[in-house]
Image (cartoon, rainbow, N blue to C red):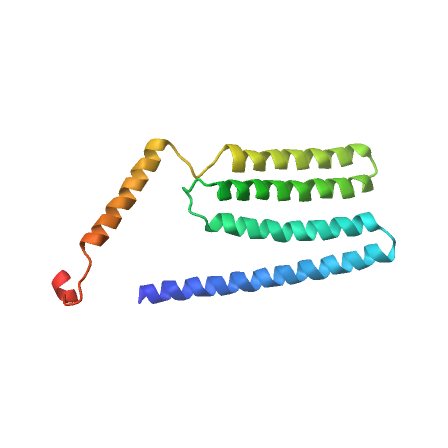
Length: 172
């Protein structure tokens, strides 16, 4: 019974997250379209270009983040490294694009510079977290221990396979 309740809660959480993700995409798309129409009506083509690039970079960022999240945590591959680089690059391009586009709207140039400073710090932190400090990789001994535990579990499962004629009650 508790398994069914847990499964039911998990499926409800997926439905809610999917629903909220759909609403988020809808709001983002409608706001982007409205901003593009406003930028096009006043011939502000730089803002129009920025909105298109920021929207497409955000969608790619979400896609890369989901692919990175679905990958095995202790896998070390070129694909995973490229995903980490793409996440950092897309986030940095959005942050610097916002700083460049909206930094000139502040009355004092120091405020715009502080916006670039914040974008630089955030980009550096994300670069450190994704590229330098890989939180999923611990010491080599810890990884070997985890792999040993996993292989022991696989061996136990292989040893206790139920054959066609076996009764379930005999195995218990």
